[in-house]
Length: 493
Ligand code: ADP
Ligand code: MG
Picture (spheres, rainbow, N blue to C red):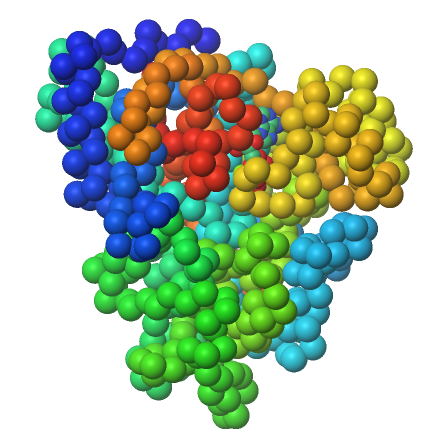
């Protein structure tokens, strides 16, 4: 696969003009984050690429085509409590501080009597183009890194950066050397907020709230990536008149209350100060152990889950996104059991996005993987049951890490084959500084689904735009919030 010669080489003067224009646009349009030291009152433009990055059309087409099938697959997994329990029994024990706690919380909620079976999923399936492999039916190979079921981010900023790159292109700012660049615009901001609105409306239609209603964003204290979330709130308000509130897990008990509705047979969650009934609890927190520094936060999670508000995601949906489940789902027989009705050709296309993922437990496959991890570590990445970046162990670091970790806990990890993406040049603009170099990109495709976890009826299932994140080739991890990467848009070729 031949990547286009990239990026354009403007003169120093032209480059300074492009950068300054990009920064103004970003700050003017909320392609921004709160400053690290800004005490919540100053913002900095988000880390971005100056140009969209080239991305193979055929790989993009594949990734978009399989999204609704992936949504459905994870919906079915989340509905199968028994299978989840069986598949994760060891992980619950070995990772008792987190995955085990999520499960324990689910059991507590279940014991109080779950009343709300409608669940919203805002998902994101992440991929890297594999430069060594061939893809589905001869296309560029797109390989899945992971499927995220909780607190997916950058849907709004992705739309913003594709608008920024379009502006730089159409306004002539890229100049003579860059005038051929045509970015593609991601509609993820609109589609994700539409997903939230679908759930809100379904609640209003089915729960007969007496008065005002609102969506509750559960957020992290000190979150810097607030505008990515705020844009969703603003769109909810502008397009649908839906108000939202923001609370951290620690603030939940103080700022909300239960209103038991005996006639309806469920508990309404009410935002105390406004009196608004919460239709939807949308988690942009709660995906990592650090989000639960004390029992207060776990208690808040159970408290929220026990209400009739729709959750995005429910505990079972969050648990379905664990890396162990992703490993088990690379088995074609397992997939077909979950989505037997899906077009076989589409299931083939979905499976073509997988690389090998091995268990690290003491099953025969796990024992073989353990050997491989020591013999050829350069082929692998070792992953714990964690989200949010910065947790994986790469290549040569794997053997030492395993030696320093009790062998009876290795089963809590999965061993994934490394994907080697093509690299190309682009410029990264971070806090006003330019970093010029070889970068690699990761595509995320968003999906939204609303379904009933009891009846398995799927009311809404859509592909919801995309995100491109890029990083300098020299760093292993691409988390933008974690500080290693930047937001990008695609230039299809
Ligand atoms: P997290 O849940 O912490 O985001 P990921 O599984 O997404 O964990 O891995 C984090 C990053 O590590 C990815 O964004 C990617 O850059 C890199 N990575 C993960 N798996 C692979 C792989 N199989 N091949 C190459 N890079 C990978
Ligand atoms: Mg990830």
